[in-house]
Structures are given as C-alpha cells and as structure tokens.
Image (cartoon, rainbow, N blue to C red; front, top):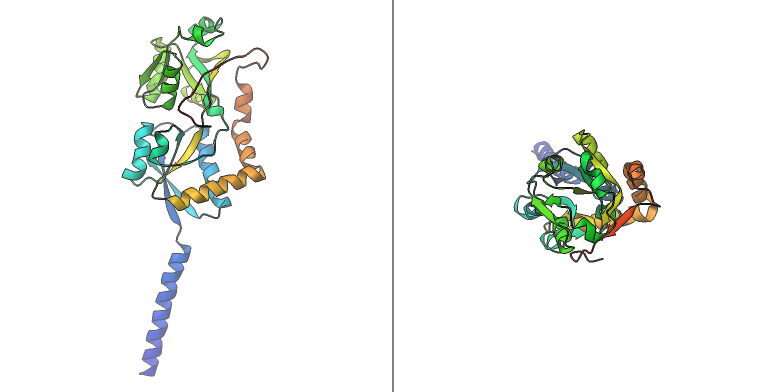
Length: 275
C-alpha cells in the first residue's frame, strides 16, 4: 500500500511540475494589425524596432500578424473589438482616445516631411512654386480617414479624399489630381514597388508639418504599453534606436531629390498634433 501511495505522490508531483513548467515557458502571443497591402521597408523597420524594444524591456512575446481593415481609423477601433493588441499609425487627438499611444516618434519627425509624387509630364508645372499660396492652385490626394487630409484642408490646400490607397497612385497618373504627398521615409519604397516610370518626385520642393507616428496599444494591454515605453527609452539612451533608423532609412533619405541649398520647404500648420 505504501508503495502505491508513494507512486501516487510521485505522479502528482510530476503533474504539478509539468503544469508549472508550462506556465514558466509559455510565451505570450501579441497580434499586430497589418493592412492588406504590399509590405514596405517602413513595415520591416517598425516590426524589428518593436521586437528590440520588447527585448530591451525583458517582455517575452511572440508576434503574430493579422490582416485588418485598410482604413486606419477602423483598424484602431478594432484593437478593442477584434482582439488586436497593437498597431502603428500617424497620431491625431481622436486616435489617441481609441488606444494607448506610445508617444515616441518612431520616424523621428520625417513622417511630417512630404515629398510630392506626380506624373512625369507634370513636373515642370511645379518649377515655379515657391509659396503655400501658389500650391493652392494644385489638387492633392490623401486617404479619406488620414490625419494628413485634415491638415492639408486646414491650410487651404485643395485635397481629394479617397478610400483606396493603392488606387491613389493611378489617379495621379491619370491626371485627375496633381500630386500625392508621401513621407520621406516611405516614398522611395513605394515608388520602387510600383515600378512605374510615369511617377516621379517633384525635385527641390516639399511640404512639412509637425506630426508623429506612434505605436498604439490596446487598452486591454497596459502592461505591454508600459514595457514598450520602457524598451524604447532604453534604445534611445543607448543609441540603438538611432542606429536602427539609419540602417533602414539613411540611404533613401540621402537619395531624395532635394538639394539642401536650393530646396523649397512649404511649412504647414498642424492643429491636430500636440508637441
């Protein structure tokens, strides 16, 4: 009887150990919202930065990408409704009410510097543009729910809101709009992916406005938000944040057709961003 009792105790101990080990070794799965479009260099950067920041904060997690609605506002709402844990986006006051904004500018302000993508035949039309007032004679295209659309409109620049991101490039090509403002850190990757020689960047002319691109974390995950904030701070302090940014974007930024001495920067107001 004693032998069977000892075996029973050993079995219980083994089961307890196995259950405990599972808890110790279990790694949390974090779901990241991804729009249904081609992935660019910026997406790879954001994912690697996320992984490194979580590692720096000793937050163990396995990242899983899930396809979400292409409209950015609806994606942020989906953080709560569809169990998505994290998404990255340009910020706005409204967006910061929908999720926890990790207020570290992931693109170091370059998201607010906008190259003007136009069709090759239209480049010369921009040659004499020097002021915001002159640019009002041209029509831009932007996403209907993008903060940029409101920013352009606030500054009196004609802008056509549109829902289909991929189609916007074709609309520029057809001449239905004059230009498509794209940020310095994404325009090169986008034009490479399009492989269309009919689209070009207007040289030595760009618009800019204060803005930031943040990680947004579901309100269900305050621990994740805290760890991500800590991890990014560590990376900023030890220089690895800047190193990673330069690794991904230094060459593309240098290759943009903007001569420092001759470029014209048209600065716009952004009333939807708190510095």
